[in-house]
Image (tube, rainbow, N blue to C red; front, side, top):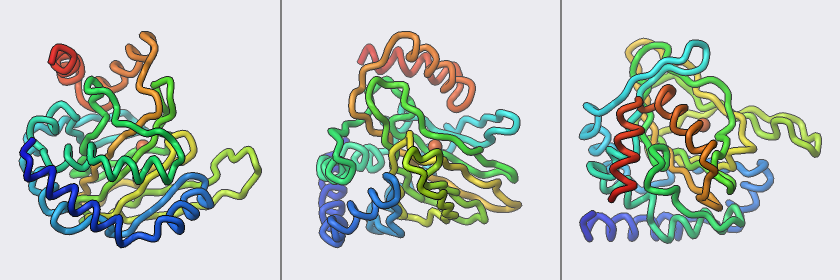
Length: 251
Ligand SMILES: [Fe+2]
């Protein structure tokens, strides 16, 4: 990764963080059961570079379809690490990770190099592309936190978020339907937010980036195998997951 990309991202993140009322963000995150939504927050300078990287990796999109659950395309970390320096710089930016750790109160760190989901692009490009309701369950020993960044939004699809789903404290469910415009950022505890993307319409397009952080990146062998199989069939393809994993492990 070039020094200048890292520096540009670090400077822009610092500027964006300077414009936030941190205490307010943290309060809202906890009031919403570990969920925050920052509308068009990332600076245009970063967003424009990331959108250019979306176009660069588009030939590597892997399409998948699981009846009644999901349909869409994705590009894994293994491709992004080689072709998307701005996205990688954002994922690893120390000030950004520190901000997330301070909001969540958790010692967050990026996922291991072997995880194709650690940062990945999700392409909704064909009518009906969607993902059904789910939690971002952690296969790691630690908890998993998701950051979602809108990059291309020319669609009627919505990120539907159900806050307080199965809340042990009995707080009533709150449903939000969000458009993820370029630069809009959503962050949440993967075990707490029940969420989905509604089906894409005709002649529409939506591309979003997800960044995954964990509190403890160790994983049992059984969960590793299950996680790899899920990634192969539901997301990136057998070849990508197993060849990419071998490549990153031997790196
Ligand atoms: Fe998710």
